[in-house]
Image (tube, rainbow, N blue to C red; front, side, top):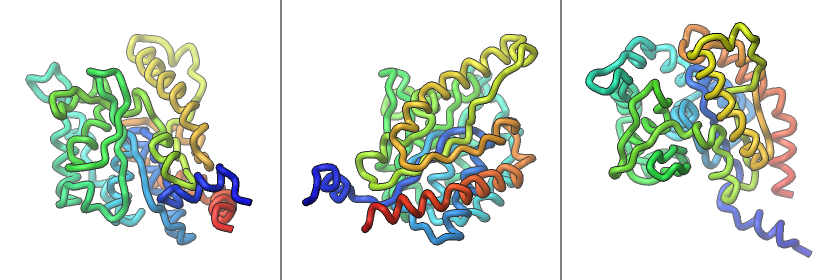
Length: 271
């Protein structure tokens, strides 16, 4: 006899979905995870992304290989990415990021991507998380990457948007109702801050932001079947790509460690 739960699972249109979490430069670890998927021939049917995870999801959905993504990441000029623009309160706008992405992926439309992509953003007008998946992906991805107080917010349809990580760092929820198996990859692991690290307004502000992300990540973990979190990423700075190879390797290694569980879970859904 088929149970109601089994019927629900069978009615979900996608077999495997991957949620790529936010993490600035640490998002390079997502590329390592994708490398692991490639090596075992795991077919991903749909992806969701927040902030740096939206870039990883976009490039993956556009057909880039993991190694190609890594090389693109290494070519990014951090100085250009975070150079303040005026007049905009001293905040950086997203023009550099948008120029890179549209150069790498000339057709800026969700429907032109090879697999389904959902981009998570925070609507500041409504104080709510939103998922964007139709039309042009340029503004949604830029909005999802707009870290508050670092980047200027992005205006879409007369609404103000910032980093999706403010409310949903690990975007598993948008996949849960449409995927049989959901894999969540978090590249912002929690870590203890010493008293020295908490001195000064800048450090307090960074810890506050981290606490917000940690809080909403705990909820998102409940919605995934497989949770991947390279703990050693906590030692890497957020705003430099100098350690790109190391972060890539950590993402790869942690995903390969979880691969037996991933393959078992996938097989479980199709027997």
